[in-house]
Amino acid sequence: MLGKALWPATLLVAATAPFWVWNPYHLHTLIMAGIFAVLALSLNLLLGYTGQLSLGHAAFFGIGAYASALLTVKLEWSPWLGLLVAIAVPALAGWVIGRLALKIRGAYFVLLTLSFAGVVSLVSVNWMELTNGPLGIPGVPAVELAIPGVLEVSLLRKTHYYYLVLAAVVACYLVCAAVVRSRVGRALIALRENETLAQSIGVNVTHYLVLATVISAAMAGLGGGLYAHYTRFVSPEVFLFTYTVTMVIMVVAGGKGTLLGPVVGAVLFTALPEVLRAATSWQWQMLLYGILLILVLFFMPQGIVPALSAWRARRG
Image (cartoon, rainbow, N blue to C red):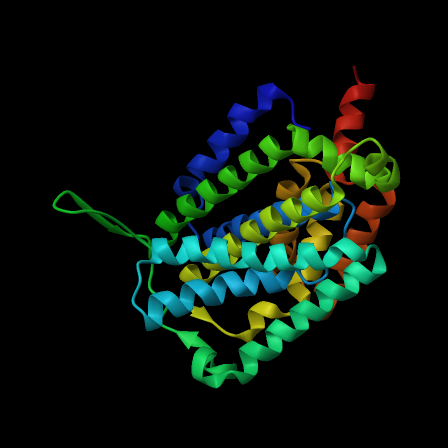
């Protein structure tokens, strides 16, 4: 992990990014990296600390996006209330998945989450009266900061929205850090290492697995809500399997089971396709992306952050 001395510099760079990133498209890339950092942190709580791989994590992301979009467009709720519901509804769905997972593990848990994502995606396509089907929901309102008679700022501009996403990343990081460093985190790690042994010493498998799934789903829902109010359009594409694959790549390549790894993975693997797109054609872009990913996994099998930590340790 980054040394404590580097944290102030890292936060300074992140906080001042809009002042030296003048290209709107590059700022857009940073915003998307922040949203994916929220998603990667959420998946890491399951994959990195309980050892459970969720291949349906895009379902929680999509549910959050649709929940906030529907409430703010059809019922004209405040976007802030929409974001709260985007956290609460996926959390409830995570509780259901967690309860169902009590009797299954491993590949069966993977299939359960994948099936759940498929079902939710089909609902978004076919329930025309609610979701508008493949046409999606346009006109999702921008988030606003308003103090009556004092201040009214729309976060429609990328510069403003960047800071909202940055605040969400910091908040999710602190939540994950608090969970991991608490009794809950120690229980989750015990479940990951040896579930039978953990259960034999009194760890309540049911309680902690459900809790981890709920927190993970809530954070993924927040990412969906942020995405909906940023793009101002939601369609069934938010449930695409590629989103889940991207999250898994970010977590594993960044360093699963670490706090900083998912954030590093999200930034690198959001920016990397854009760099390759600018440097070469689409065919070469995908080939180079695959080669670089293989090299990272081959030379840094534990992930980028653990590899850098080991390198710093060897240097004393």
